[in-house]
Amino acid sequence: MNSRERVIRAITFQGPDRVPLLHGVLPAALMKHGQPLVDLLYEFKDDFGGAWSVPKPEDIKGPYAAGESTDEWGVHWHNDYHGMLGIPIGHPLADWSNWRSYKLPPSPGDDWYAGIRKRIEESGHPDYVLLGGLNLFERMQWVRGYENLLADIAMDAEESRILRDAMVDREVEYLRKAVKLDVDGFHFGDDWGTQASLIIAPDAWRRFYKPAYARMWEICRSVGKHVHFHSDGFTWDILHDLVDAGVSVLNIQHSIMDLKAIAREFGGKTAFRSDLDRQHILPHGTPAQVKAHVHEVFDALGSYNGGVIGHGEIAVDVPLENARAMFEAWRECT
Image 1 (cartoon, rainbow, N blue to C red):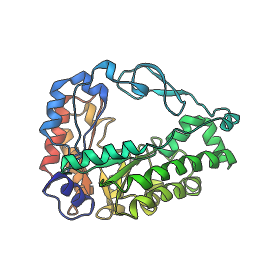
Image 2 (cartoon, rainbow, N blue to C red):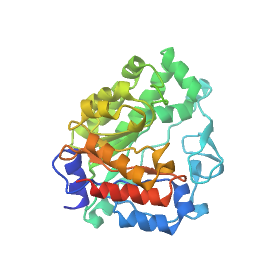
Image 3 (cartoon, rainbow, N blue to C red):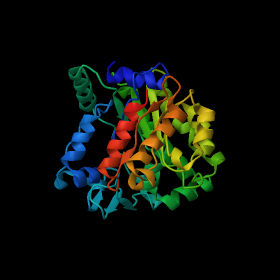
Image 4 (cartoon, one colour):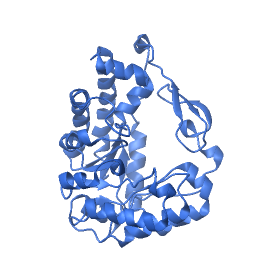
């Protein structure tokens, strides 16, 4: 069973030979741990075809680079920690009157799609290929400003609908071309939760964002592509809505929610990319605690003839021995 088959079987509950892995590693962690971490990542194969090396400091650019930068959307970033995502401090649409002259970045050109197609064909496609999609809420807040956007949504301001629809139109243009490639899924993400609740009222989310997500994801689902969705924080109130809108694989911060309740509602029905406890257990636990945590998550979400993709973020504060314990435990889960 190759990696592509393994992931598809896990997502569709058709009995993978083992839990597939998707490595999540911050550049700062690669710089801290160096080649030993790279060797560990290759020892436990990433079923999504990840390629790993120790980055040179000068190779890290944009919002992940220390200092200040401006991205292609016109957002200005400040970063105090090289290799981790910075903080947006300048928003091109903080003054909405700038909309008259503002231009969204163009969708990828035909040469980009041709390059992806060529790489897939040359690889023989042994791995599960996942392309990126739009982080709609996050991109809107980076461009408009967090407080401005939340106020727009609360007041049902026309500005919020104009910006949302323009971003979704751009994404639809991209997806209609991208789904023609021999890829297996698309990854979207928005951090919708605080530590204890959703950022906006669930009814406001359903009114404003659910139709926008559904419009994008229908393009993927209509041709058999899986939709993966990541969201940090407490998102219990909208999990059913995400699945209803078209999500195939949920990557949620289940360690701050009721894991048993999530398993009861979704186990065997919706696949998960796990998000192991990166606040406490991964950075501060013992290897034995990490392994126990992996097995707890597998028993809850992955013991349905599939259902889980093994993942835990390796940040700069995660010891190498805990990363190894995580991978070893996932290999024990069949």
